[in-house]
Length: 209
Figure (cartoon, rainbow, N blue to C red):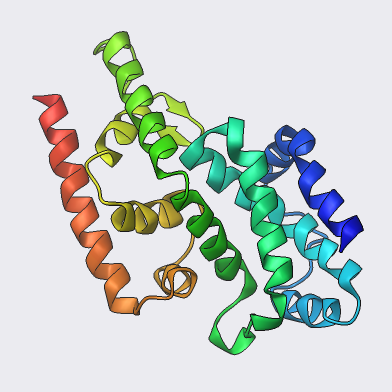
């Protein structure tokens, strides 16, 4: 694990490159989804095989974390996600869902440990909207994948509601994948998303008054 730990932890210097790769979309050479389970299984006896999981999924995890916490800590949190995934790889059960939502679930748990930093980020983005003022495109400007007006509205949500909304908006997970990532029933995802959307609409409508 020593070599892998070094690989994951030194990824912070490559965060921008990973983010650019993620923005460009998935590689045509990326293995099919069912290859993830095979890679994890193989890594149980050959730990170095897990680096292929890292190479394939780090850009998306980094982009998600950066959208929630900002780029300053995204490298560290994304790297910790893969360290945690490596340590828990024997517990991954493909019968319960694909690897991608499993990784996002780990990342979301780590993001929760930085909830104060996340709240400060949204509040800072909200202040940026106010400072720019109406009519200059501030509402539709985006930072880290988030519209500034949406960042303000996100402060009105509970952590559980934000998890659902941002796993859909930033990670592009389906409702079933969100349920798998968070370990909650499918219906709970729909309920939280409905509540969150109602709160977001209210917050955005009030801003426009």
